[in-house]
Length: 343
Image (cartoon, rainbow, N blue to C red):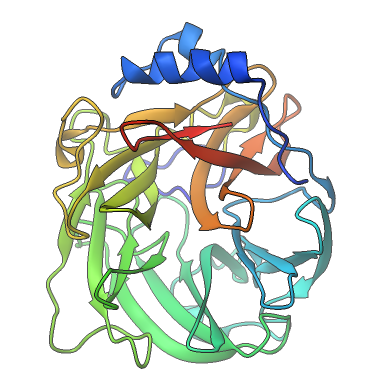
């Protein structure tokens, strides 16, 4: 969910495989691509995998697979939208996370749109579902991130657990776009951030899901000091010996004029430093592009990654040529140098 220091207009299947020849072209392009990507590289990006049913409007999707095999997607919207699927292809809207509202968020939301909640992050831990989400208004960093838990992840079953972190108009960063990661030692971390000084991360208490009261350092993971600060929507995915930091660069929420693109860097430590494929620090604007506008897909971003039985899955939203925001799903492959690519 995009909010920047200078407000801009707007808001803030099973995916099919790509032919082997196209994948080879994409890998060859990735091998020489760092923070910038040429139109020829973008042309190799696959379209979103086939999804049907209630797949629009969807902003900032987050997805998990329940133990019973059902997929649950929660996304930005009035009191947060909940969708389910039994096959990762056809999705059904089943209600709202907070059908009776979330009064505790009202000090942070826009009075003209008070029930709009942003950028949820859903995960299944300790036998229950954890949902981190944010409340703010467009163009402001008067923001907060909250936690709710549920035994089922279904509408109306969520219990408010408290506020994790807030920012004010005098803060140098923005408390939106949360994402939970558990490191190799079992410690819990929350990454977040949008514009201003970029992507941050704090330690959580793994027993409560709330912010640690003993380890209070705010770590800096990524920023774009020469690009208007346009980095947001982090998610960290642990694979092998690396932590991969996926983010969105540039501008969301302008329909077919959106310039959002999905970038990645990696580190052997969850707190960084994160570098892109060319070795550039993500705190210095680095990031390797893995998905951007192509064909009739505009502004693919706000990435999420989870592991399914068949592959690692990338979730995101994108805009159609008519400006409709839709759910996007693709699979992630990993090349011989352990860098991700979309197929």
